[in-house]
Image (cartoon, rainbow, N blue to C red; front, side):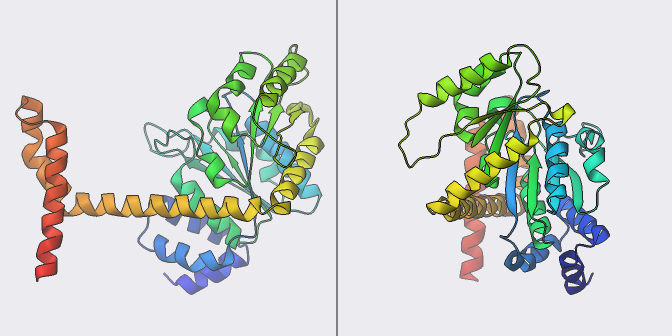
Length: 323
């Protein structure tokens, strides 16, 4: 596989090549790390948006309408729709792609469904790598639209420049917004399906709890935007709020600081992943195979066996150094 050819075609925004690169990333092909290393110098230009919130809030419909709106402004958009993992194939269930047919058929829009692969945060680690591929391809906006898992969905805030939490008037979603998880990650709120009863109360509830947050004249105060996504209403307000937040970030160095923190977190996760993989490869599986019965029979605890795996790994490193 010619990495130079692959990289060149990605930068030309060739859809087939981008799709191929994304498949390499998802399958953890041996060439993936080299590819991501090579394209990194071409990343950092796309603005990354996170769309999250409880199930049934209309995130996919809203993402579809936002992509269409941005396209009319001449922008190019890549959408990473993070779906639940299929228990049968291990892949994404593709439900979001069905609801984004309009945007997906437009030139300048690329939609990719990716599986959560057990990520409690609702955002697959591979989705962040995929965003780098889109960034290198020159897309203006990258939208993460994540599986709705409520409060656990915190890692999207680490991956996006701006995060919007989508709520609906009923089902206690206003109360959900007040819980620590969603309250901490939202840069602004969207009350979707605002044509339903209770929308004003939901907006008031969110605004009330926002006022209780510690803030000053220089800090960012999230706003609440009302939309009816299936009727394409309020999408312009969403875009204006995105612009307002981006301007705020760039006016006081928060934009670069947020990206620095994102890079730190990602490097930590990569290091952790590599160390864990190496430990299991060099000693973990072998010790587990010989000691598992002891844990089952109560002769040893899982903690003791875990320590044994780590000690074996350290011993193997000493032997290599001595050689």
